[in-house]
Image 1 (cartoon, rainbow, N blue to C red):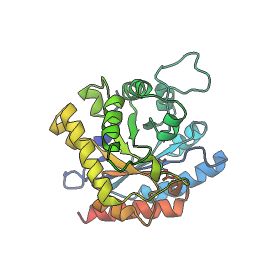
Image 2 (image 1 turned 90 degrees about the vertical axis):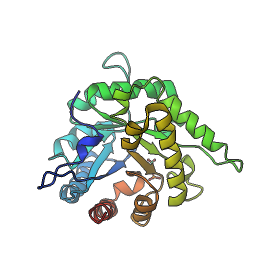
Image 3 (image 1 turned 180 degrees about the horizontal axis):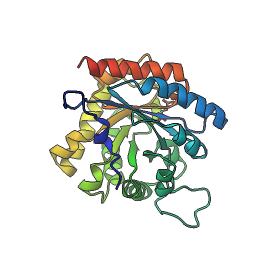
Image 4 (image 1 turned 30 degrees about the vertical axis):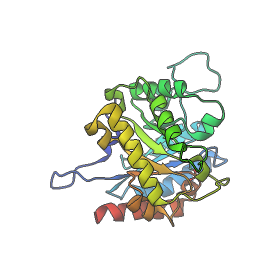
Length: 276
Ligand code: PGA
């Protein structure tokens, strides 16, 4: 197993203490439309991200660009990841990429179980296999959970708990120690978002997810598991989500393709952690 995991992003300061960081992950989805543009956005982001002591930046790129972007990575403060992996190492799986292949071109993180993939048929059993494959290959899996809609009775909370537990079914403590969770309410994601998520509400859900993790893995492991928020995160709401949302970072879609805005978000996260 490589030494790439969520704890590694906390680097030592000059006095030998640990610098705590926020984890900000960009998810470019199926964009931009050329590798040239992808490289140029990444290099722009890297220039800023590479200087920030209190933020770990990750850009999850379309796999066709992963090699080129992976080559542009310098240092450990701004690294690359992929948006999906297959659980097998190699074989007759047309169109898929394996965790091992992703690692071979420099990827360090993999999004697993994004709602857009779940909507396309990915099930919890697949997600469990992908988490295991990712960690075995040395990738940090970023496991997405989130309710599709909210009901007045609050049943979505139970749905969310069931989804989290099913996505982690049979995942050992050792593997869990490498996992990042992203809470992404589907109704708050993308252009089709029907409502804005509020930081206070996210904080409650994150607490609930953490309690669920405590029940399964015990307090120590659950408390050190990074939980991110994702869904229309942008430069205007970064501060409130990071300050009041009780999260360890953000999973950012659209805003991560706008390098200027994304860099503003990274700087906000850095300042917040610096002044903590
Ligand atoms: P968004 O996407 O920031 O564009 O809403 C978030 C995601 O799907 O991860």
